Length: 235
Image 1 (cartoon, rainbow, N blue to C red):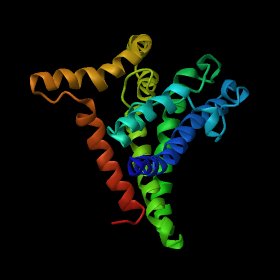
Image 2 (image 1 turned 120 degrees about the vertical axis):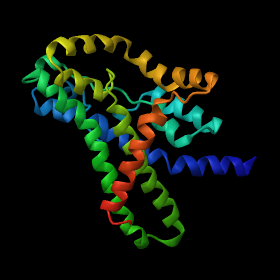
Image 3 (image 1 turned 45 degrees about the vertical axis):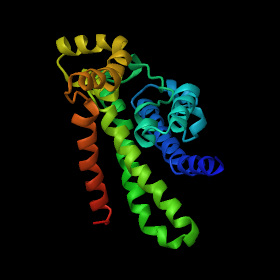
């Protein structure tokens, strides 16, 4: 019993910091780019900050991942795909050239995550400078940081509003099609839940792989992970 508790604490300790940093940089980047492009809403509300507590959502950042951890089911994927932070408020009407600016605000989050993944890859080189007793723990944190940030980047770029990829598509498509896609945002959460939970459930029932994670996110993250590892000098 006690050993199990210590194991949960250890597992959580190598995931919590990467998760907090990844969601904080992701959300702060949205607000920062929006501010630079004309909308200071997030700035005035104190959301253009690297303080993770400003971005934590009690349900999405704490309770849901915590329950997944206690259930022992897919810690890495669970913390990323089945958790969320407070969305950064952006008043798109205040942006200069709103349709184009929307694209830059949207890609800022995934772009920040890819940047953070690369930084984590480079920091692995300094692991030998750490005391021997902490090297394994530090390495696990950095490897998890690469994985989490890449999963966040890829998943959020799916072209489904209100995900970042959906807003990029709205900003790039001709107005006729972008309006149709933008109207889906009110149903976006239901669509995302359907993609993550309902389709795979139906697929398992009929013996067909219908998981968007298996089709798109997993393979793309795998390629990006290998790329980051190679570019940061680890093979």
